[in-house]
Structures are given as C-alpha cells and as structure tokens.
Image (cartoon, rainbow, N blue to C red; front, side):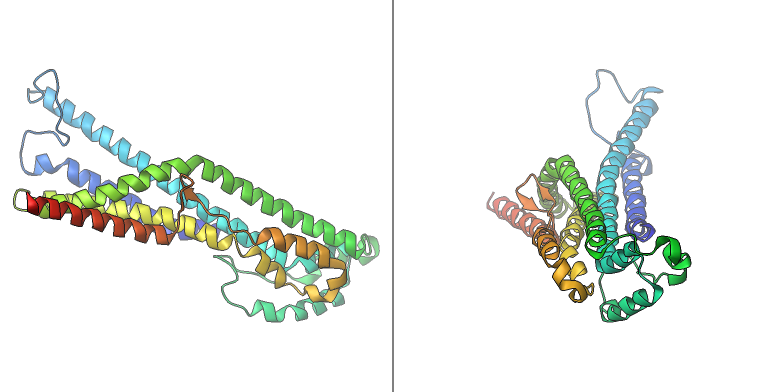
Length: 321
C-alpha cells in the first residue's frame, strides 16, 4: 500500500501548494496595488476603510478564503487517495487470486518439491506486464514456510477441496470488503461530484469569457489570477475523474488474475467455484456523479467540450448585442 500512497502524494502535494499559492496571490492583490479595498467586494454596516477596521476585515477575509480553499482541496484529496488505496487493495486481491493454488498447497501441507513444481507452472504468468496497478510481486523463500520447516507436525492438515474453499473464501471476503468500501464512497461523494461537475462546467466557460471580454479593463495580475483559478479547477476535476477511471479499470481485473493461476492442474475440483467467481468478478464498478454518469476520463473530456460550447454561445450572444 505504500506504493499507492507514494503515487498519490506525487500529484497531490503539488496541487495543494499550487492552490495555496493561487489563493494567497489573489488575496494580496490589493496590497500589491496599494488599494484600500478588500479581496471580496461586500457590504458592511460600517465604514470598513476606517483605521483599525480595515486590517481586521481584511484579515478575516483572508482566513475565511484560506479555510474555504482547504476545505475543497481536502475533499478532492480524500476522494483521490481513497481511490488509490482501494486500487491497491485490488492489487493485493489479484495477487492472492493469482497465487490461490500456492495458498491451497500451503494449507494442505504440501512439500517443498510440490511448491517448486507449482512455481514452475506459473512462470509464464509472471512474465506478463501490467498485471497490477502499482504493486510489485515478490517471491517468497519456500524454506521460511512453517510446514516446510516442520513437516511432521503440519503436513496433510486439509484435503485439496477444503483447502481451496478456504483460500477462495478469503479472496471472496476481501472482494466483498473492497466493493462495500466502494459503495460507501459512491454514496458519500456521488451527489457532491454531480454538483461539482456542473459548477466546473459553467466556471470554466464564464472565466474564459471574462478574461477574453475584459482583458483591457483588468490588470495583468487579475488576468493571471483568473488563469490560475481555471487551471486549478481543471486540475481538481481531472484528479476526480482519474480516481474514478483507475477504480473502474482495476475492478475488472479480478477474473484475469484468477485465470493467471495454473487452474488447469486441478480443473475438475475447481471448475464450479472458478466459474461462479468469474461470473461475479467480471462486473466493473463505476463511481458516478449523482448516478447519472460515470466519473471517467471521458467525462473530463466531455466537461471541456461542454464548457467550450457554452463559451462559444456566450461570445455569439455578446457579438449580437
């Protein structure tokens, strides 16, 4: 799981720093231009430009905007990290499914010779690339397995069918755990991302229209601040859609992981259980926005297309007026 966290942290730390820099850059524009204005234009029942009142009002707005930015950033980061961790759990599950016969042999108390022969049958599957999302499979030292060290006391504790049922049952429980975690994630974030998608779609088109329309009326720093905001909005939406994409892809790998095991060595004893698992493991899980559309990279592309369409519409309406 450390690999998942490291991969998630690579992009997240830059996103957090960029968000804070953009917010601070926008908040301190009045100071740069030496204007006695507030970052957010609003009405107060008193003269906020009065001595001692203006610094206090300015400070409160800065704190409020930083808290708001951190709230939105934390929400997106939590979702993205959760998607990476669940994909890491899929890697662990896929490794267990691929080595399910090895687990069965160990539960049976098979000899070291049998385990070595089983490993030789699985060499072809080990050569396949992109089997896991981020995990790396390591070969265990067979001399460290307890029943190999003390074969007299642990050998032959289970027959093959009971041992295979036990090994497959652990994988099924793990799969159910991951799916339940994904369902809870979907329930928690589904409506949030639905409204987030609408907000991002209209925000991009209005920001682009505002920058193009009033470039002459705005200073360079104001235009740069709007550009930073648009980039961060797109970055955040890309993180959300990418998290849904990797979950969708990794949720379909369980059946392939089981087929990478040398199941043909015991096809007669395993056939019914394997077919039953494959039937249920082939269903992909898609995180959605309000149950209307899946959160995938195709949706991110659709957001850009829709925003550009609205931007073109606003430009045409402005030219007519």
